[in-house]
Length: 110
Image (cartoon, rainbow, N blue to C red; front, side, top):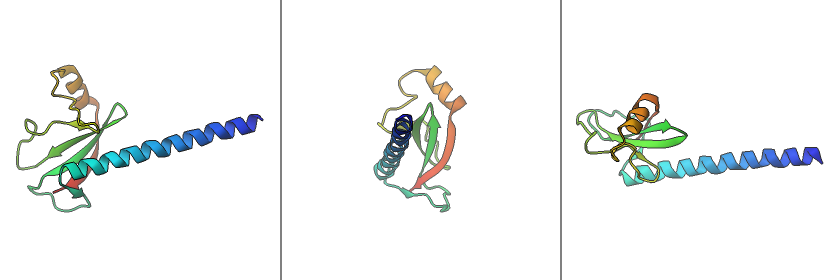
């Protein structure tokens, strides 16, 4: 009986991880479509707009960027729900993001 309960718990963890991963993948697809971008596969970026993925406090955040244009004031850092982490006047939260975020990489390009 004890082994059966342990197997159920393990199965729950595995299925939970798959569901979380599929939600994250869906979020990535939605952000690419919303930004009119395709998946980034090493194409030259130069002055093209591109989408960067960040991980902060167990959430995904996205920043539309461009090496030739200052975009901070035009494109906020958004989570999967489209909520900005820095535009609500909470400078402490915004600074915490910049100090502690992990840049995953470029995920999309125009």
